[in-house]
Length: 379
Image 1 (cartoon, helix red, strand yellow):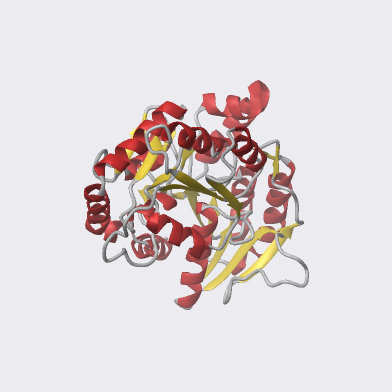
Image 2 (image 1 turned 120 degrees about the vertical axis):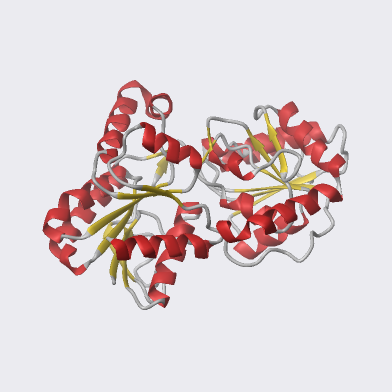
């Protein structure tokens, strides 16, 4: 089968759950003998290889800065959409399936517009579906209205849709998406730990430093929790436009020797940190899935999240069995949840790993890949 993946980011040049999903999907399809092309923005130097063996990676728009002021810029998605449109108008008949992320929406609109000439099947991943209120908060009154309208336009495109949480599934049906919807619950690779490691007095955050992730809230939470747990430390991994705010918060609280923020590091470093952490502390207000939550639980490390209407990662946490969901990202609420993890001790680590083992099959990448490939074949 000839498959075209469409996403403007490429792991590891940019790091996130969607990037990892498309990398894994592309590599697995290529390993199984399919012809795979990956359309993206250029994110690597001209002398570099993009790093997807067996996959034809095509930069259809130039290298550009994706964020400004912590928000996605408009120009890169526009140019990427034009690049996707041009490529598919010229070469669309090379593909049996075009598999696109819904966001950024211009590339999905381009794939839909070129479908008549290309005659390919269109598969769409909805990692998130934003509310009207969130659009206006993100882009302001007029920009938010435009974003909402474009998102609604994409929902009306005939498509075979996938999403990664029950939250997004409910929203897709409520908004009348034009096509069948399936939930892909599995993105975890590898095997769970044989047993939890003893917990160190350290909380770990791993993720992109953007406003929605609220990485700086970890600093205030640790400062507050140290009133009860004086040996508590933190390691904040990742990079992004909010990194300066994280470093400033550490300095303001005088926690340079307590909280480490090394930036972007190799995945193996994060994996090792998750295995020994007291808990994963992820105060994000918006998550479409939460792969890092599964990575923590697979090692028996409990998770602290924040309750929120846009936080689908909360679907992966069972209160007092795999962690705790704080009512807000306020320092006192997060600190109280971290202290509860400490007080629960090894029993919570054992139940976290047991939960993961009991759900490992449906949470595996293999299960999602099988569903996707089956959808390709059915047409």
